[in-house]
Image (cartoon, rainbow, N blue to C red; front, top):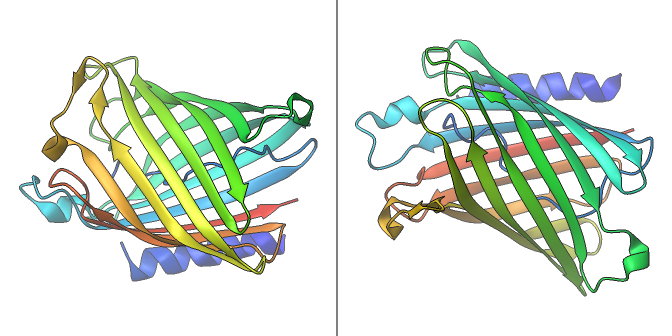
Length: 252
């Protein structure tokens, strides 16, 4: 279980060197392919917010370390199911359990001969922002469209997120985008973009929306391993102003 030992080491180093906003549990733009039948991937998402929204009275309150363990199993060639566990290290140095979700996903089969990759995932589970509030039921519907143009890869995820219990029930729109340049099948160098535009019946003014953009690095040289890291900068006052992300995964 060497890969699992690596997970624990990286998690420990991340926690000891940098201490994310509570909403930033999983920062990832998805690619369309599923994991493959009878294959499994374990991923550890580590995210840290250096500076929260400019609108926060106490910006240090956003300095959470979020760790999300995601395990995905391929049920068939074009079908997979994922399971998430969310934990976080709060600014006062204590870990908190924040919830679980499941995520079934299907991808368009090759026989459809689409000119792009396409898949659809749906996440659902219970979550809480911290231990002082009750759990609520929430999730997302994530269409995924991607394509490779020579050495350039691009993916668009027009996410629909929802909360179906508690006082803040809503359906919102949070599109995401990623592109990178493939350097000799070794690494990908590019950018990622994330947003939160508000609910469908009440899109927020731009200054109150969330827009984040930043450089990203992907390791491509080892197909059984996944390594993504980068830094996101807030483009609006209501965005977290600086976030570090580190994702490590192992396929087996």
